[in-house]
Image (cartoon, rainbow, N blue to C red; front, side, top):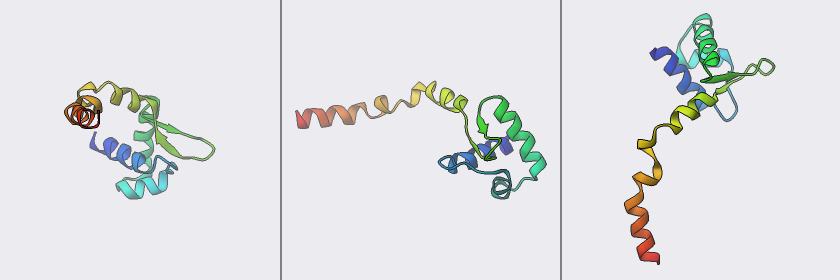
Length: 91
């Protein structure tokens, strides 16, 4: 499990431009065959996307969906006291 999470973290760091398998493997320290199998499963579940033409991996929609469901980390709720204090001071 930790290998898949490590892959997700590296893909996330490179999400703006995407990352190919070989540099991804080097950063995580996995053999290409192992990383490919894990990435294929992550792609099937929607956690990453893979463009067959550019061969780039990016984060998938399922991560956004899961993150959106974590309401306990809603920024508005976390900062509500601070925002109310600013609103009172600024009118």
